[in-house]
Amino acid sequence: MASHTQDVHARPADPLPLEGVTVVAVEQAVSAPFATRQLADLGARVVKVERPDGGDFARGYDTAARGLASHFVWANRGKESLALDLKDPRGLEVLHGLLAGADVFVQNLAQGAAARLGLDSAALCARYPRLVAVDVSGYGPQGPYAHKRAYDMLVQCEAGLVSVTGTPERPVKAGIPAADIAAAMYAFSGVLAALLRRGVTGRGGRVEVSMLDALAEWMGHPLHHTMHGGEQPARTGLAHAVIAPYDAYATADGDRVLLSVQNDREWRRLAGQVLERPELADDPAYATNAARTRGREKTDAVVAEALGRLDAAEAVRRLEGAGIACARLNSVAQLAHHPQLAARDRWREVGSPAGPLRALLPPIGLPGGAAPRMGAVPALGEHTDALLRALGMSGAQIATLRRDGVIA
Image 1: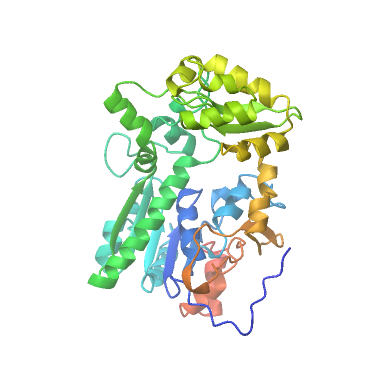
Image 2 (image 1 turned 90 degrees about the horizontal axis):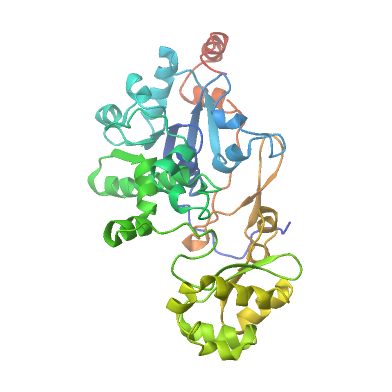
């Protein structure tokens, strides 16, 4: 792995944007943890409050990351773990001790659980006027779905994403937790906006994000196409519903190469320079996108026959030479060794209870030379004692809480 030493003659990097901001999160699974990880990467101190009996249940999803859960490793680096029983009044008192000095509170407990603990955003903002309090839920706080369980796959189905994903024969869910990620990123941007507002007004306030609202927004194109055009876009696998050729095609070496012809000028170049069939440029059955789409099977057969004679590298070389947008159909393992990520030095190592783990830099490039804070993935309760001591507790008090199961 490349060294990342700092030039001693370079000017000091600017501070990270969220240095000095403290976030307290009662979070689990993906949506809230991924949101607060973004805040941690930008310099915020994030205290993750977990159950003493096992912690965030995402810790147990799998053991793929050298014995740790891959979801948890991805969404929880750079945080401090406090193992605390919030159902015990003493645990709740500890939490309020943290909130008194916090800037942001994030929770994604089951609907109604935060309110029963007095941790809903309305109650907290009344008690701590400068606090930005974030509620992340599945379906929002009101309405007939408010109390439904809201796992990612279920919300993908409710939001219609699954209905437009897959093949004509079979709908499929997205291969990543799209609803969780959508909610996380809106919660992240909502916190940033609320902190900017607080800088002007001095007041925090409530931020509400639901997984359904977030994913419904991401469904903008098919939603507007259906509402205003009267027909839902068809499921077309890797193909495009209204553009041809636009698909993945097998190459002679067993790989697959995707290409997209966006206009008829590109088709002329594809026909002459890649397919080596220049006569197709003006053939009425292929000359326009409307014709190519009507005769999609014939169009795809012509492209497939030509690319099937080439290996993937040669196919990409010819397509790029003709100015045709293209890509390889990579596996996840190939992504982990993608030459573009390597060339741009996008990989780092983060600490964890299992030792150093490879991780991607956050996508946001920061001005001023500041590097994101990619802290270690915490063990359950790793920071409990230090946090309690910072609140003024004695060793005897901490020992009593541990004996009674309030902390771990």
